[in-house]
Length: 216
Image (cartoon, rainbow, N blue to C red; front, side, top):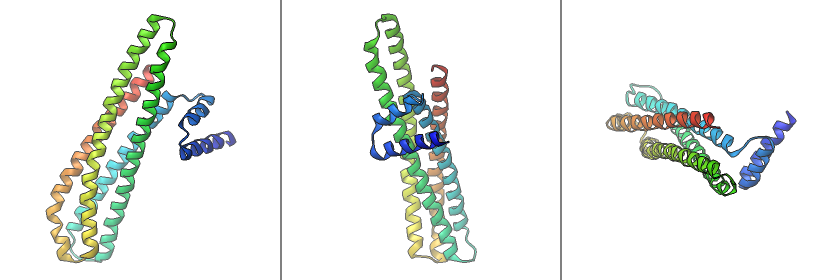
């Protein structure tokens, strides 16, 4: 347990300092290489997208419930919606952070892989390694595009959600809530597109992880 805690402490320290190369060297001492880190990061990015999808569904449910408001404490109703918005913002930031980590480690892995091609003395092995590098990098770029495409769909959803929360904050009355009904269909369509793109990204992540593990 002490060793595990030390590893986590080192990881945290390097993450804060931005010492990526030192982080890699430390992890390699424990038998964890860039390929392993990339798989772990992709898995975490995949999970963050699943969590964000669930959160946006929850936020949409709360928004829909608000538009059907038929009495009760308006302040409590607003606060529930604001809580959902803040959780959605946090989930969105987590998605971005995880995708950034995937991209960073992926770039480092493929840079190292390309540089190591020159170290081969066997032309056959160098050719096979280069071919594998190109295939893996192509699949990684497809994955990253899918992740970034889904990520971009988050911003308009958050913007629309934020607008409604801010409006309600200063217009907390039944008439203002009734006016939100016109925004519900648009928000629901945006969230559906977001969730569909996130599912495509999740499917890409599953395929990439499976392929990387199979060829490791």
